[in-house]
Length: 113
Length: 112
Image (cartoon, rainbow over all chains, first blue to last red; front, side, top):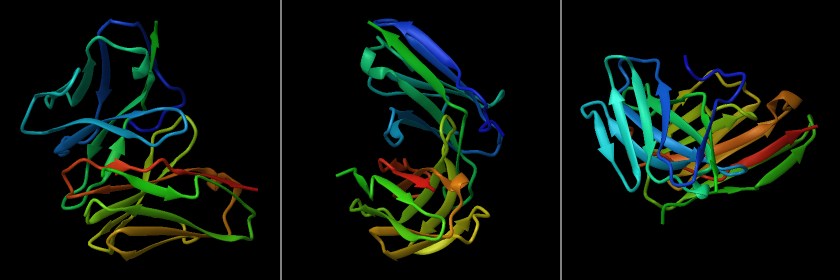
């Protein structure tokens, strides 16, 4: 799976830039995907989700894209702000009937003023 | 109210101690979860409760014992833990299997 990592990839951007965080998921049968933001010392915070019958979903300043052909998920953050600095995890639901979230390795986003 | 509350926030325990972690939500969610997160790693699922019944145990050692007293509460009883069990323990809840799971702030556990 994708959730075993020895280091955390880092994306460094300037305030105001658009950020794109990518994720490869492992199970072609997964039907539900979530992006979480985790700040230091806190629990994961829900950002946006998408079901497998969609390929794009937009929220406030965020867009999630799903490409089932290559099992790829991306999170786009528009006009990135210093408060967006955190670790971002994608998660796929591999369960049937129950929610079994498998998290990706995570990407650290650093936003410079 | 989209809050999942976990207590305590921090816990230090010896290898012979017995302690419990608590989790509470009042969103009417009928699915609740325990996750374990080691430093610089993603959360890993431990247990799933659905309608107060244990639905999934991800091969977790028996020194971790979950309990769901009612639809709002989830406990994790700890006994004879090892130092490698030190981690952030996260509780989460969701309305259904394919709806967003809300996480608590976690309990930072240190086993000495």
